Image (tube, rainbow, N blue to C red; front, side):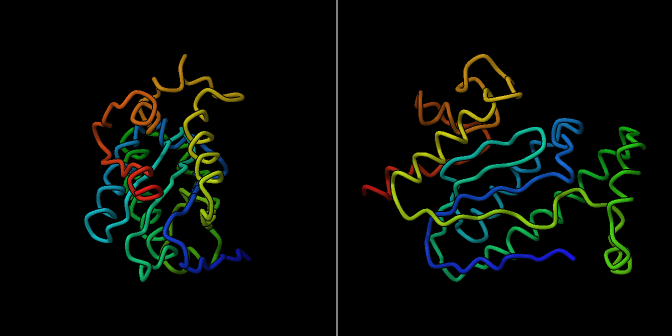
Length: 191
C-alpha cells in the first residue's frame, strides 16, 4: 500500500522532486523534456505557480516552485502533472515501439490501479516536497539542482551551465531559458 504525504501549504517556496517509475530514464528515452516545459507554463498560467529553479534529468525532475497563492493544493497539482505527462509518455513509448518498457510499466500497476483504468505506471506514486524556510536552504537546493547533471554517474555535459534542461545558465550567466519563464528568487527573497 502506497502512503501519500499530504503537503500543507504554509510556505510560498517549495523544493519538489518527482521520479519516473523505478528510476527509468523515460524523459530521455522518449525525448519528452517538452512535457515538463508545457506543464511548468500551465501551472504558471493557471495557478500563478512560478518556477524559481529546475532541472529535468533523464529519469526525475527537481524544482523550486514559488506559490503566489497559498490556496493552491500542491498535492493535486502534482498528481495532475504526473497523470497528464504519463499519458503522453506512454503514447510516445508506443509510437517508438518500446514494447519492453511498456510491458514493465504495465506490470508495475497494482490490481487496484488497473480496476480504476490505469494501464501503466510512468511515475512513482508519491513526490517529495520540502518547504523552503531559509535562504541557505534555498541556495543549497538551487546549487544541488544545477550541479545534478554533472554529479556522480550523470556527466550529461562538460559544464553544469551547458545542460539545456536546467535554470543554471539563467543564474550563472544571465541567459533566459527558451522554454521556461524563470522567476528569479532574488526578486522576492530580497525584494
